[in-house]
Amino acid sequence: DAGVIQSPRHEVTEMGQEVTLRCKPISGHDYLFWYRQTMMRGLELLIYFNNNVPIDDSGMPEDRFSAKMPNASFSTLKIQPSEPRDSAVYFCASSPSRGAHSGYNSPLHFGNGTRLTVT
Amino acid sequence: SQQGEEDPQALSIQEGENATMNCSYKTSINNLQWYRQNSGRGLVHLILIRSNEREKHSGRLRVTLDTSKKSSSLLITASRAADTASYFCAFTGGGNKLTFGTGTQLKVEL
View: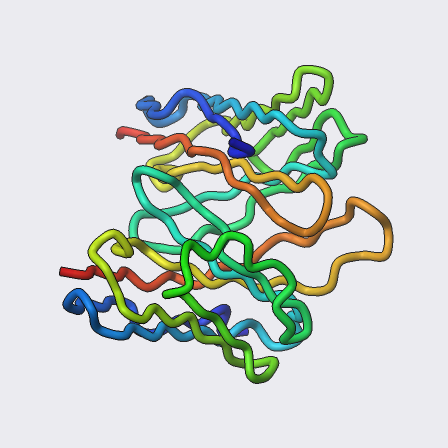
């Protein structure tokens, strides 16, 4: 099990440029989450997918952010155009199916993140 | 804010001592989890406690949950330098969204 794989590990770009972050979840996990981590706001959930379908994108800060999951083994988070305030570490996480009982939730498996710097 | 609050924000102890971190939250929860984050890495799941449980153990970790006080604590016994990391609580209410606390930075010195 290779774990959740994110690329690139570091991204430095200029304001106004398009940024695409990539994630490969653990095989067999059908939930995928995108989080953003900053010193000021901590860990924020941006969006999550179930079986490749976006379920809740209420955490996406603006229309400049978009996420896709074209298949079970790949997801992207795109920022267009990027701004300096988007600088953060972006994490992808996956988890297997939730149990049938209300309240059962599986632990998340995180990638090592992409550190984005927008100048 | 639905975010959990953790205290202390930072904790420095000597190797061999116990470390206790606390988490408070505001909503009703289904379960509460604890994660560890080493510098420059992703979060790693440590332990999950369900809302109908009061205490859970895993190796040197002990987690308690008091739903009446909306609080949880993580105890690491006989700490080691390798335990140096940030520790986060996380919880779910309705739905599948996992909300994270503000984190405690633990430093274990030799």
